[in-house]
Length: 492
Image 1: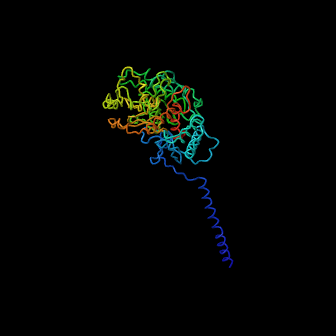
Image 2: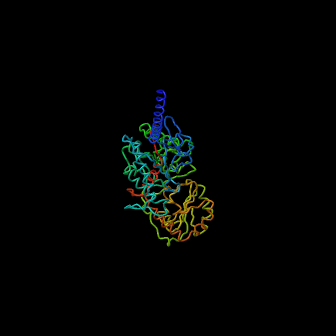
Image 3: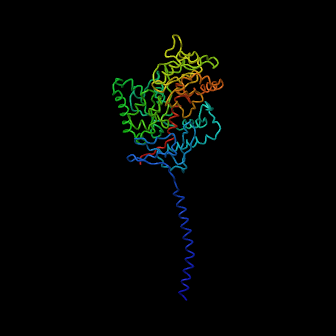
């Protein structure tokens, strides 16, 4: 009898304990999942030495990111968990944000920079659903922008946050110097202004990007050998390689990102080729180039197209202004040397063929080039040996609508500006139909493009000192956009 009672008591006790064990186990499992969380990362990871680079998978690769299939070492870059496509341009630039908790107090300087950039991305995303933002100087608007609200907020975030460290190593004339009174004036002008701008920081730990203050134009002028020699690249490329090796050995920042948060500015035709001296400079770094030719390695996802502007005296004096559209008697105008594959076709079909389409190899004696720009409705800008040309900006300065006849060219600031809203793009095979194409544009549409050209002109103006939204700040903003779309981690 006692034995049966003990067995019965144990059964009752077990029926009570078992549910409690199950409940406690479930609660423990649930608590564990809440603490650890579940993460999904669509990025593929590759290792380079002791460093790790995360590159988004091809299914979700944002336009501003490193290209896949590179043969060389990749920087430590990763997009964050949630991609937010902010269509600030025709390339659909993606800004990455992350659902993270407040950062720990022992943040490193790099993590603080990345947190600041994350806040900027979030602010830009919100701007998509906001009305125009007040601005005492200028509020971007209209179809000349892919998205004026996003551009405006991005620009304001740049003004608020961006810090650039300019390496002090190097001596003029090759470094910290450049031409300011030539067709390569943008190179020298930017280097000059970068030395004194408010965006410059003397503390590299606070910098979002690092500027290499070298001038390709000065290298060609002072250290280039005989151009007929097969080794004429060697001394210039050697200079660049030595400079990068110097800063890489003296500072940790180049090696930390393999150059991905470093940038240069080059307007000489040889600039793109010279950057091949250092593979990471060519493939990873932000290259702000006048000669933005995709067939020669220019990558819109990381490189920046900047305008080629001919400043004969270093200023815009005498270059800006023109009559009203109704006072322009010439339909289209071009004058220039015959070189490259496109210009011979243009002259073959239109030189001295039609009084409405004024195409010249050499202007007649006594005829002013600038006056012809001002008398013309459309100004033709064909590629020569290289894709870059100052004619696009000369047209905007004088109120003439640019006509672009180029191949493999990325127009300046096309991450923000919709060039088709204020210029005409003509394919090479359509050169014989040039007049028909231009005559087919209605007067109403021509007046729209001409008016938009006058509006967009501010983004190509060269000022001393620089003014908000001018060409200096637009170059910086393009660099800022590329930095926004990369997240850099220290080595493991």
